Image (cartoon, rainbow, N blue to C red; front, side):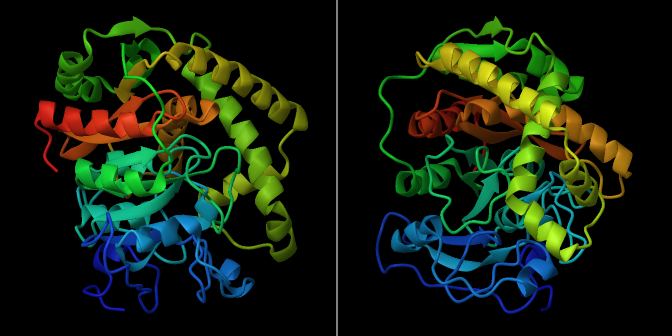
Length: 397
């Protein structure tokens, strides 16, 4: 496949998988790509690893989320690269190649939905489906200068999608335009929850966790949001400290990842690239007591967040504490970024909250995102707010 056939290295190697959409519908005229963990009838899902493809036959049915986009009128233009078994945040794939970040070519695209983000950021398609477990839509969106959504857990079907940690996994999507992000939501999301959004909350720990340059660059977006929702109230959402969020998320996610994928890993002993190999090795020997503590911590945080947001409140904060790491960054530096990042992405993950990220600024020449988070079921209202904020803050689509 030539570069012209696979711009930015976004698509899985081999012939491009394409499917026409319905002749009319709410997504008519749009093109989309699909992360290669969603099944397409008649095709093998590689899940980012050649051995997975070798040990799995062609899918017998198309995943409902993909089918809904096709039935809505959108045309599918290919399947996109994911990190191996979707277990990472950098976007690296030792087997299929690491997609280029069109917004900052010397930096990582973010993962695990790296190819989907690269395809949209490179204007190869209008939107793309990804999955988000620990930040795999939100972080690539922030790194590549895109709009992205992690919906409420369970809001969009994950039938026909390979699992990582099922009680965290969600089907999300990317767009370069907020109206397109919302149009896709009109097709995939259930009916909106009742009531308006507000008041606005500013989680102190999350802002303090961000690089000073990132927090400063996002100030204008926060000011614009205050014009829409009123002055923000500073709150404490993580008095235990965000490192504790990351540690408990890592333990509980690893337990689920091994339950989901461990039998396949143990049977086939696949070779993994840097980072992914370490995570599966840790998941294999995860102490059940640590995982149980993680699950208990999660229940407490979920209750805290749902109580805080249940009346319609919206939290706003930096999607990622920093811009995308450089492509030549050493593994220890990437791990340090991962720890800081998951401490933040775990907030929505623990409680099953919807989170929308907007591309509001650049730091050091690279994009940084701004997140809006609400109670479960308020996904459509959050998408409406993102559209309004993009207009109010003068964010280009």
